Image 1 (tube, rainbow, N blue to C red):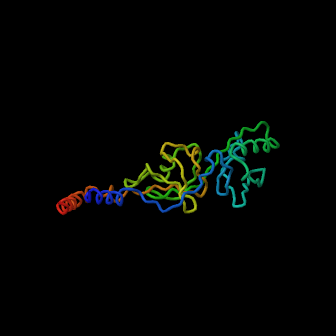
Image 2: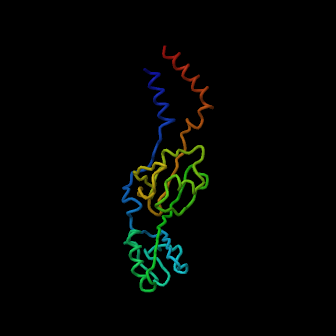
Image 3: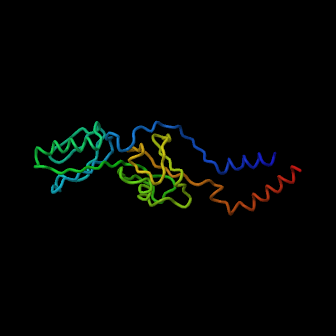
Length: 206
C-alpha cells in the first residue's frame, strides 16, 4: 500500500499538468463577434484595386477606408459590415461586388518554432494557425493547446482541427502550446533511476 501510494504521488507530480490560471468567460465564437480594436479588415472590391486592401481598426474602434473615410465598426459583425459597406459603396460604384474578411491579431506562444504576433482569419483551423508560427516543437503538446486572455485561461475546446470560427478567439488573445511534462521528455534518461528507486522502496516495505 505504501509503495502504491508513493508511486501514484510521483506520477501526479511528474506527469499531470499544472495550471496557475483562473478560468475566463469564453464569450461568443469568433465568427459571431463584433469587430474589436486591433482587428484587420481585408476588403476586396471586384475591379477596384484602389479601393481594396487591409485596414486596421484603431483603438477608438474606427477604420479608415478609401472614399468612405472613417467608419466606426466595433458594433458590426463581419457579415453586418459587409452589408454596410455594400450600401455605402453603391454611392460611388455601380453594382459593386464586395468581399471582406476580418483578421484577428493573436500571439502564438509556448512550444512553437517561431512564437510571435500573427493575423489569423476565421476560415483556418487551429493547426493552420500554429503552422504560421512554424508548427509545434517536439517538446510541445498539440493535444493541450490553451487559449489565454489577460493572464487567464479561457475554457474552450481547442482540438487542432477545429476552425477558429468555432472558437471564442479575440484580437489580443494568446494561443499557447504547453511543453510536455519533464517526465515524458526524459523517459529514457530516468528509466534506470526510477527502477532503482522502486526496487529500494519494495525492499524497505517488506
